[in-house]
Image 1 (cartoon, each protein chain N blue to C red):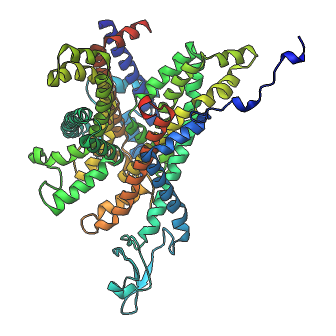
Image 2 (spheres, rainbow over the protein chains, first blue to last red):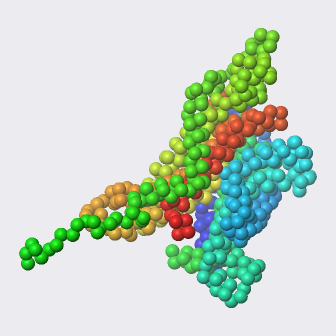
Image 3 (cartoon, helix red, strand yellow):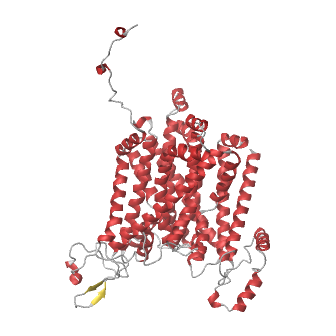
Amino acid sequence: MSKYIAKRILMSVLTLFIIIFVLFVLIRIMPGDPFPVERMSAEMIIQKREELGLNKPILEQFVNYMSMLLSGSFGNGTSLYNGAPIKPIMTACLINSFKIGVLSILFGTLVGLAIGIVAALNRGKFLDGLCTIVSILGVCIPSYVFMIFLQYFFAYKIPFFPYFFDPSNFMASSIMPALSLSLFAISTIARFTRNEMLEVINSDYVKLAEAKGLYGFELIRKHVLRNALIPIVTVIAPLVVSLLTGAMVIEKIYGINGVGKLMVDAIAGQGVDYNYVLALSIVFSAMYIGVMLVLDILYGIIDPRIRLTAKEG
Amino acid sequence: MNKDDFEFISDRDISVDENFASQGYWKGVAVHFFRNKFAVTGLVLIVVIMLFAIFAPIVSTYSYDEIVSITDTSGKEVIAKSLSPQIGDGSAQNFFADRTFIFGTDDMGRDLWTRTWQGARVSLIIAFMAIFIDMLIGTSYGLISGFFGGVVDHILQRFIEIAGSVPTLVIISILAIFMEKGIGLVIVSLLITEWIGMSKIARAECLKLKEREYVLASRTLGAGSFHIIFKQILPNTIGPIITQVMFSIPVAIFTEAFLSFVGVGIVLPQCSIGSLIEAGFGNITILPYQILPPICVLAILMLGFNLIGDGFREALAPKLEDM
């Protein structure tokens, strides 16, 4: 097991390193100057390039950047546009995004599981149909469309929730974005849980357990759910990651100061802020690879067959 | 033994099994598909939207980027800004009795009916083009990787592992720096992100199929690797790949809508579903009718393609209980 984990960690670190390298080179070979040229004179640009070390060879720049990254700062650590420091701004944004992300994943997993279980236990009945419709709608309606509707009806028409995100009133103002972000997760997990449950319920060992006299909640908890959960872990991984993309829009709609909004501002604002884009890309990739790694290891722990085949291969 | 030893049997005793007649593979798939109510609903929805997307902008009185002027009650020419939807001659607000705006107009005075269908058209074109190229790239990549195995497979799969570890958001951001905002950016970002799923499916199918006898037979007859891959194996992987395509199209439509919504997609006065939603969102509290048409079209497209995909998947691998 430890060998499997070590191998996975090594692979992840290597992947991250390659990604950072490629991102770095791509951003450095970009045509044009990374500065707001129209507001700077030629001498200023030359001086600025000198100052930031942009006229050194790319590899040397990369080594410098990596050493700064490892000591915990992103490049020279400031925005190229207004000199605002990257790290504190990004940390604040990350915390906001993280809170809402965790909330929506919790929400999505719990509600999704509940819906899936209810549907599987009432197979073919009214509740099953209802759950199927909910999960189809959840997959088809983009989270931000749902968010717009929620915002329009429950914050504007009936001012029940605040219209914009407000960190000082976290609970009330995070319910709507978390709910709409989790919509896709709810429906995917519900659909998956239902199918897995049905497969397990029809399996021989559950029939055996029933024959032994187990029934009701005990049977579901000990035999069905436990085995049905294994594949469900696999769908959660991409969902966690898709939250990143979804969050970008939700943050725009709901006025949350999160990493998604920061990224949009960095690429779609008046000019592209290279330092921000690079720093955010690295953080996103690291998060993505980290989540994948954790879930892979988790998967290996739950299902021993995975790590056994991994060892052979 | 002579001729008399044999007796002629007329063919009246030979009967053809009509109840369980054998049928071609694709005919079976089609029968299963059309028996599925949800799938047919999805197909109808998509066809209707597509017909509107193709014909509505052609037939419409206005063009999608035309700023319409109307004559108001005092006989002055004014720009038809932010008019709510009018059915019929609009006589209730008869200051523009000669014009009809089914979905109303936007805050620049452009007809939303035309813009909605033009937007649907642009979104569909982007999705189809991107996914078609993705299918070509992904399928070839997956088939080659699966067929050759060994070192080739190892290298190609490591590459996918690394490429797949870059979040879509990062890819889009980097592209946004290199490229002009617009249709090109949307298509290229779809190209880069969507082929990986396609190639995984093609590879898995190829691994299954390359052990089959017909591949061996073909090899024995002297066929080259590429002949086997593209002439023998490819036709047999079409089913799962089409299913994947059906599920990729709504993803592509959604990605386009998402990119245009955050402001790196379609540039005005061009329009797509995403940019229309973005424009409508800006006015949602005062003019909520502006956001409804594009949102409904988007939801119907996503629903339709998902239903078709589901139906297709079931039709390709019918479970015993569905028979």
